Image (cartoon, chains in turn purple, orange):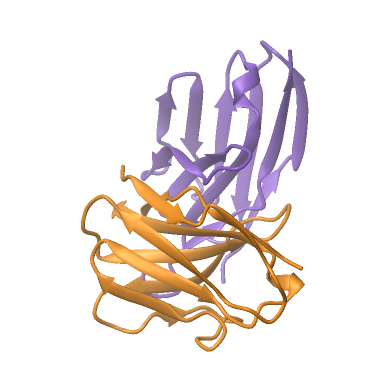
Length: 113
Length: 113
């Protein structure tokens, strides 16, 4: 199936800093989803992107659907301690039928107060 | 979004036994999904469960090991059979609400001794 590569694998930042992470694929995706997983919880959907070039915000979070359709970016502005968690990108596996999602390996974010 | 609950939230089991995990959704959904998340890893789809038909399993997962039931449009169960320590993972159910957007339950944390 398709694979999604996320970078960086982990980030250690100070409270108040901005964060940027990305997700790339060798093949085209028609949808990009960004999830956050808090420790001990299931992933929560943050942002969904459906059009190449689309830029969507959700509070301090902004995500972009890359113009090539092979990448997506998630930015967090003015980080706070509750931003700690693992951020996953995901997209539908268009090479197979059904509604399967392919998930990236995740970016572990640590915010130091 | 969707309100999804899972039971149990965690369990510690002995090798060779089986555990059935329940997933309850607050409204009717066509497709439900079961994922496994091994320690420190991303999410891996086990199977897709549609009401009224047999579950569709992903490569590497078989019905004898992970039997799934889907008796109605709001409920599903996943059984982890003949468990070994390698089955220690978080097991997550999810539902699709619209256009690939999946919403996850809180997960079941399984430890096999």
